[in-house]
Image 1 (tube, rainbow, N blue to C red):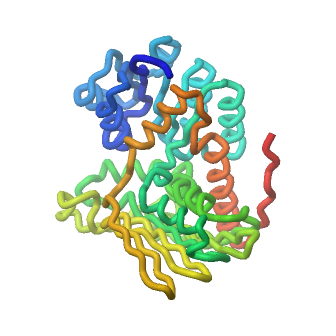
Image 2 (image 1 turned 90 degrees about the vertical axis):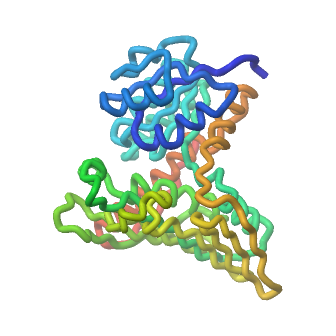
Image 3 (image 1 turned 90 degrees about the horizontal axis):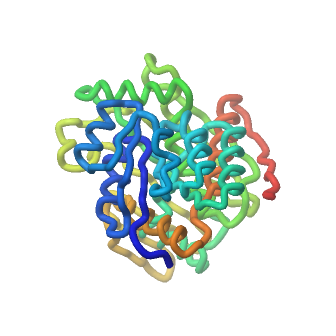
Length: 351
């Protein structure tokens, strides 16, 4: 075990960093926030004022070679994430990288190659892996309580259309110019599907829709995954749907339908409600109910897992290959939906 604090830099000071990553860094007693970087002056200044850092720059390359900075959290738009991740790894930094690790197969492979060649820890920010309800469902699957084959239903409907916040709408629309909700937000759902499944995916299909004519891309995507053991998965991702903004102060987008996390099997049905923390397994023998933390996006546990991997020289989880598996699945779904057909999944050999 190393002694002392681990110096961290954060690249990308937008809503995810300010709302989740930076508060977790501030709460952790073994971390020193040494540097911030963002090309957006407003976001950078806001993060620097609220969280403090020895350095705050527009360009992360101004400090990435500083030996005092051992690790970096990357929370940037997905089209720029891969090159930043590669630069950090080549500078000898451990990396906690927000999903998706890329938006193309080529860049995803390059990130994996850089991570494995670097000898550094590379952990992907699949935050639902650290959710108590998701872990409970995985435990029930592993114990055989749900049975197989399974039907895995996953959905998320965030990034709402906000009349009172046109800048938010503009930012989401900009993402739609280079990618889709399925590839960007759906990375979490794809990772959960692979985490729950007991066999690899073999075929994908689906549909998409554009509920606002002014958008540059479809904003609602439904993908279907067939697994080798006969299980199926449904991933549904929707952005820019309206909400009751007057109630926003009561919680994070209270009128937005939060992630669907449901699993049907031969022996039982299990689901987790992110809003309430209620987690339930229904079987012929009876019902098991758990009350777990509501709205649990456990960035503290995610950060601790990353730091433990660094200190104890353990493999991080989820790692770069997990990030690439999720990316590959969403890109395959994206292609199948674009072509309005079903596509066979060819499993890549892992070197």
